[in-house]
Amino acid sequence: MQDRWTALAYGRPVHIHDDDWATEDLTEADFADNEDHSLLNQGDKQRSFVFTGMLQYINMVQLTKILSSVLSTFYTARASRGQDTILLYQRAQPLFEALRQWSNNIPPELQMGITYQRKLCFHGYLHFSYHGVMITLLRRLIRSTILPPRCVDDQVLADIRQLALQTAQGAIAFVTNLRPDHLEAFWYFTSPYLFSLLGSFTTLLLVTSLSSQERTFWQETLNSYLWTLRVMSKSSGPMQYAVNRLEGAILRGLEHSLAVNLNEPIDDNVGPDVASFQTAQTFEFTDFGDWDLAADGAYDLLSGMILSPEGLTMRGDTISGRDIVN
Image (cartoon, rainbow, N blue to C red; front, side):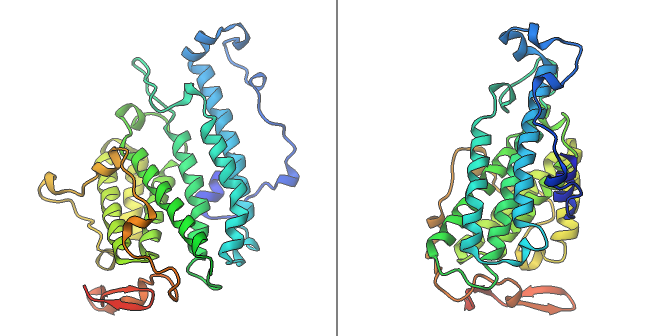
């Protein structure tokens, strides 16, 4: 399990291959603890931290198996060569289905709404790891849409961006709704990377936007997410890492071209509005104005930028190879 998540976090190949791994799936009998789970009735199991931890670990292992398939299907040196969006989308369908089934089968004992009396709720990393695997899978598909050969199936392009929109919104809503007892609890070692991965995924959606309306939406979304991380990082080490990574290695130097606000507002009341992520409000792919999926190429941020001594600045919005007046 650690090998797969380390490969994801550091972008390296896996060290243990499936052909060299013959370990059977975990069961309750594989865990030796002070409690005899066979003697506990169902009510006692729900109240048992030991049983809940065991159940969460088993579900994390199951999710890791899906991540392993994602890495082997899309992120090996050989698999990374193919950029046919339609073919990649077809290959991704079984993985999307596996992730949906995994999410639907999460036991009630592991839900985020659970509160423990004078104890921290440690289920956050399990659910956020699911968002991380979804983002990892979608990031590969989004990247292929801006590389040759150009995808000629407009419906596939629309489906990918709609799913990416829903995934990003769901992940940001998850982060925004974390409680103090979530933030102070245990987080898996890759959680800091996953918090920053969500920001970089939002940036990818921004720079590949297909309309000025969508670009504006992702700019505000990225601003809101950065603001949320900055505020919540006061009590969360993983979020502090993500803030430093996003504002430093990824966004610093691009804040002018991306129109991203990296500085705290003087007045707390003028921070980016994150209300849309705290409610059930969602956006559809068609909410961003007129989409021109048949145009040559996607939105290319770098083609509309000027390199000057002051840094990178924008000539104007460039959508599908055309300049649009601000």
